[in-house]
Length: 156
Ligand SMILES: [Zn+2]
Image (tube, rainbow, N blue to C red; front, side, top):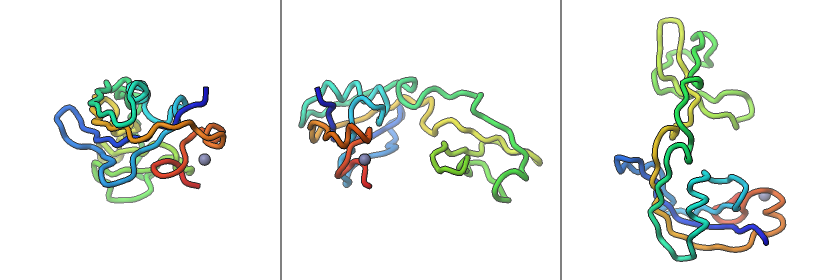
């Protein structure tokens, strides 16, 4: 059976109802099933829906971006940071390839900064209000690449 490409609109809110992200006014998000393109808790819930269906999907932090882990907080000397005048909340890209998670400054002393490599949404229970806009078979090319192509998907 060919994998499916599912397209959907979504609004993402945190437990206080604050809107974190939304596809409103944009193309729906498209993803290839079964390859981990989106968080597992959301993918499993979307797989049960049909085109046109709307649903409120709640995904616990552990099934979303994971729980916060203090092991992912690291203390580095200020002179190793790429700029001066560091403030709490500043973000840095680790590594050279641009794919590493951003590091956020969460603590400062006179000599050191504590950087947090947890995903910004780690530890947060998420609510997605979704509407399925399309379900179709993945093309051989998409299955080969491991992601969806076209509007809302991957562009080359
Ligand atoms: Zn591709």
